[in-house]
Image (cartoon, rainbow, N blue to C red):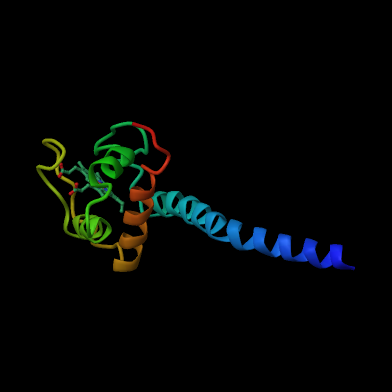
Length: 116
Ligand code: HEC
């Protein structure tokens, strides 16, 4: 009886600890799908430069900057030029504020794996 209670406590604790990690993985997977849906991947890839800079390079440049997600979300909606090279990004006007912020958070999460 006591053993069962302890087992229950342990698995409860495990669920508590695993919860946030699982949630953020789902968020990252959702980010990729959203980027594909919103046609970002025609110009961006995670690892390689295409028309625009790789998302991972953006993550690395902005890692640790205050308000990075807000800044990047705004850059998508207004467009961006002169930050990464000669080609400008047209304003992504059909992107909602909420989607822009989700995409920005997903992009920033791409530097989390400790890759240089
Ligand atoms: C037509 C091609 C194109 C599309 C579509 C596009 N981008 Fe870009 N993106 C670019 C280019 C080119 C740059 C580099 C602009 C610069 O040098 O300032 C860029 C830059 C960025 C930046 C960095 C901005 C900065 O100020 O450093 C982010 C973040 C970004 N894109 C996200 C997105 C997301 C998310 C989408 C989809 C909603 C998207 N882009 C769609 C071409 C594109």
